[in-house]
Amino acid sequence: MAQSKKKWKAPVQKNESLQGEVVDLTHEGLGVVKVDQYPLFVEGALTGETIQFKVIKVGKKFGFGRLEKILTESPHRVEIVDKVYAQTGTMSLQHLTYEAQLAFKKEQVEKVLSKIAKLPEVEVNDVIGMDYPYGYRNKAQVPVRKIDGRLTTGFFRKNSHDLIPLEDFIIQDPEIDQVIVAVRDVMRKYHVKPYNETEHKGWLRHIIVRRGHFTGEVMVILVTNSDEFHRQEEIVQAIQQAVPDMVSLIQNINTKKTNVILGKESKVLVGEDSYQDTLLGMTFNISHQSFYQVNAVQTEKLYQTAVDYAELTGEETVIDAYCGIGTMTLALAQKAKHVYGMEIVKPAIDNAKENAKLNAIENVSFEVGAAEEIIVDWSEEGKQVDVVVVDPPRKGLAPEFIEAVLTMKPEKMVYVSCNPSTLARDLKLLNEGGYEVKKVQPVDMFPQTTHVETVTLLTK
Image (tube, rainbow, N blue to C red; front, side, top):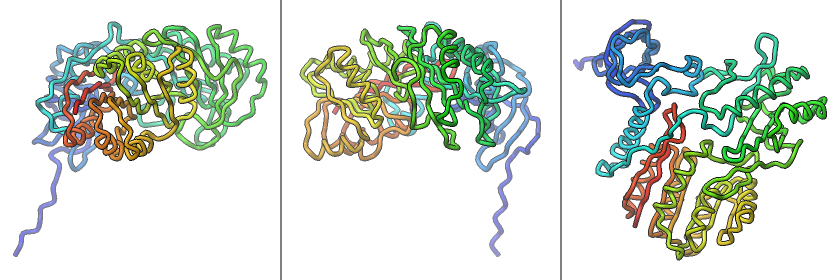
């Protein structure tokens, strides 16, 4: 008689307290401890440490533990600023020295190139880091809720919608932190009702502040649950007095029950729907809906690397897919014959066209639409292109986009990525399609977090 299959049982039990050595960090920065080859992920633990932890979740392939005690400490551990930043998940690597953070990020890129892209021989450069890896974010989106009977700003506890009151975000531009507090205090003074998510009531949902790193210009966006605005004149005046650098105040209306922050409709209350910043010696208009990299200092390094990798001579036709407000397009245009930018967000393309005029750059054209659709049309029309530059969202490139590139056969492709695993997946396809990965340069755009951006050069 056939033996019945024995039911598999994890070698650990929930609520059990164990000790073990941390053998690795996951791409999310969690320590990995193995018990009989069964991995457990422990937040706050570092490679090489011996720890005591409590098992909090047991799954089929892996489990999770809560750090109770560090028995032997890693030489790369530093004192954390405040555990509140671990609770919100905004600074998931704050317990690791900055040098070790950069090494961790380089290793993340190396791992995916080897495992997913199947390109273990490709060399990854050291990560370009920051001199001062704090206070870099030029945009803040802060939820507003009622806590202890008053309107409060802060950040949600990780994996929840419980607001933790916060005034100093450490990785945000400190000027932005001050603006949020100033606007919050105006709202308290006028007894503005904060949003209640469960009841879908209350008026003010989010305060968003964007600030030009090099210009100091401030844009404030009030995300509201209705298009009404009681005592608008007084409140607007009070905000103007409290925030002298504000050049633009927007009311964005979002009446939906949703986690998406911005609604489709908006009203300009002060100035225009735009503020300015400079980048690589050019000036940019940025609207409230437009994407703009949140770390201006590192963006200059990122884009400069991309332009250098393209090695333009002035004779090339270039495509800049996912061009946003034209930041990289215009940088490329200074060295190319003509650059075509494409972007799905219409206000961003409006900004891009203004920005080309603003900087007197004429050898550019912009189109609104999904990059994968436009490029497929162009490849079918037989358009000739020398260089394709891409900076896609986290999900990477659509398969039809890659197909179109392989049909067009540009000499070079420069891939700017914010997600190493989708980058690796796409590099595998491009490599199989006849492109060789020449250079890989990670850039640290988000210090104290696990995120890493990468610029990759491919040639035919």
